Image 1 (cartoon, rainbow, N blue to C red):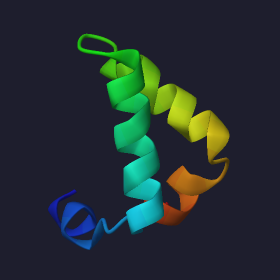
Image 2: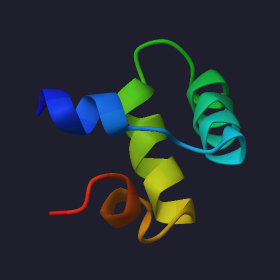
Image 3: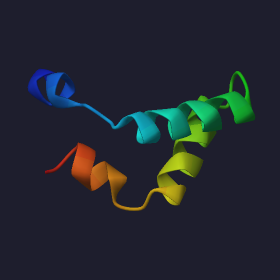
Length: 51
């Protein structure tokens, strides 16, 4: 897990999109924001966290 986290490097666009979703949804809705962001970025989890 530590190795994966050290290698976790989203692009600026990906990170900005995630931050935008979090801000848009507001405090307490971070999990909902991440799910919405993932839906708008299909396959992103596989590229960021390959198995």
